[in-house]
Amino acid sequence: MTDEDEETPWDHFDELSSRFRRVVIAIVASSMIVMSIPSDITNILRLDFGGYTLLVSKIIEVLQVNLLPEGVTLIAFNWLDSFYIYMAVSFAAGFLISLPYTAYQTYSFLAPAIYEQEKKRLITFVARSSRCSP
Image 1: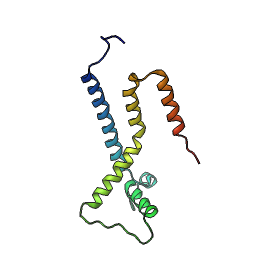
Image 2: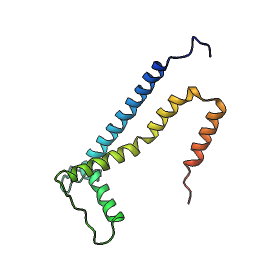
Image 3: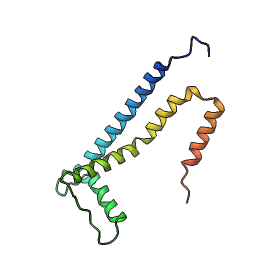
Image 4: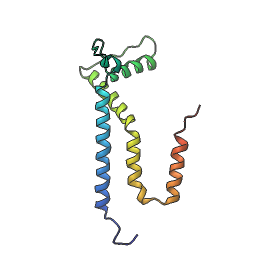
């Protein structure tokens, strides 16, 4: 790379902020989708709106049943606590859904700065670490 091809630190910052904006938009969009999707889509397809529950409500219910000890119930100390939990679970699910896109954007930003052998090792590491082990 010659001196003419090198970018200034501001150019790098602009690219980083652009990629960060894309990631934030992806997380917000996937969180909003998780907040609005019903837990049972077949009822919607049959136009049966009785017992309509959102996916986030089902996720919270599953977490409560599987993670809390027997006899323990959640208590809202503040009138906004239920809303905060709903938003936090939606954000966490949205983050998990958009994680592959976030990883791609991170790799795309770092790829021009690393050598080919490092790229191969990184791809090998990701492929090996993503395997499900029993």
